[in-house]
Length: 289
Image 1 (cartoon, helix red, strand yellow):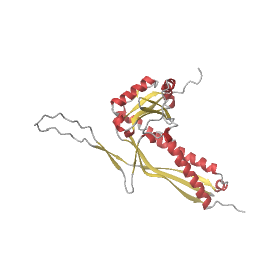
Image 2: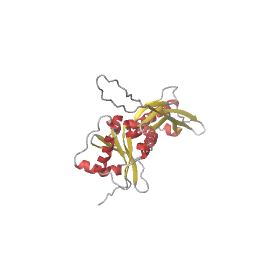
Image 3: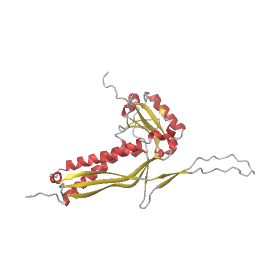
């Protein structure tokens, strides 16, 4: 008897895949959960995000008219999005097996890929923060003292005005400071402003009210250094025009169904002065002493 994949079977497979993709993508991209999020509405091509400067109050004298006025100092940034997508092929034979684990695995693959892309897109923005002037230096370890110095720069620069402040770096770079913090009992619950559900697997510790996270998607160069960042939520932004969508298309000669997934988003530097890149050694750690 000839076996065939039914529409109902494929729909069930698609639902399993979609569910896994969404869960994995949300939980495997740490940096996207540390930045501002905006959404383009239907019919909108871009968002114009305004930024205003600081104003100063003046001391007054009784009976003397105020002569100075303050400029709002507004600048704007135009934000738009672009499509990204992926295609997976579910063969009739695969679908006939009715093995949900296969569909879960496929969803995990797609979700991991989407999470990794979004995370890397945001990481690529780190080096331009603070006008490209980096904290730290190549070959230097991210010791607790150096980390405290970076946090001091952020506090002096009033990064907190853009929301909660975070440090994100390569796991090998974070390790130098993490050992000292753990010894001193300095690990605490994730500070308010960050989702514990989405970030708990990346959270290491808190120092001076700044949450420190590790991210393995940060690239180590050939010299063993990498660029992380310290930034407030308002420094970077994720703009979404269309969330994760899927469509099925039958390929009879291939005896399979194509599963096409698309999303439409963009990531941008929103306020350059609310963050700074951090360059530190992230070479592989010694595992034997």
